[in-house]
Length: 316
Image (cartoon, rainbow, N blue to C red; front, side):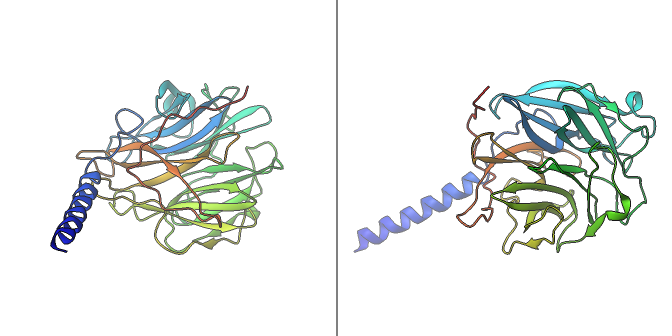
């Protein structure tokens, strides 16, 4: 009996020590140096990440880059794809939180600049991108909160929807040209806990609206979600804990995006965390983790310590 008890105690202590050690050894960031607010997607046989360049207090980046990968593990720099001082006449800095969508044979790149939202267009996912309007798509002060963090979801029928905003989540159907909308039809909502970084995807007929809670400089920064039968809601917030949050050495995990491996029901979430070591809300790094669902379609908590194995996109 004593031997059995000793074995059980040893196993419990070992498990506890292993767990503690695990939270002190996070997987490496997928991009070098400091990048945040990653938008991940797949075009053709490659994955792409479009991030914010981090590393300056006040987030005063002036350009956007693109990164590509054939397997989600090894990433190649596609260099600068949009430079505010050079390519945009109405903004010069604070190049934040981009997103990209494909329609009409074109790639539409949505971005935050000087707390406005712009849209640029290209024939290739790696650019170069050109300002499509010459003015903001969503202008600073037009709605409550900040006009930042755009995201565009293209539904199965080709309809496209724009989501944006800090403080409130604003949503509106885009016109077929992908660069205009009826401002009188904007819907503004504020799910409990919502702060910024909205992202929408569809799985098995259900629409998922995800967002980040708390401030990006707060170690508690995390991701929650809600679901709906429509891309414009109403949305019902999922109960329970955030689906993505920091643990141990991982802090400030949030401002995410999600990608589905083409041809598979296999999903991954890209996000930033405070740079390890010694990072903060101005020095963040980009990570990727697997994202899974239960049998009812609920998103399971993401393990920020799970390493991503190489993934290939099959087909032509």
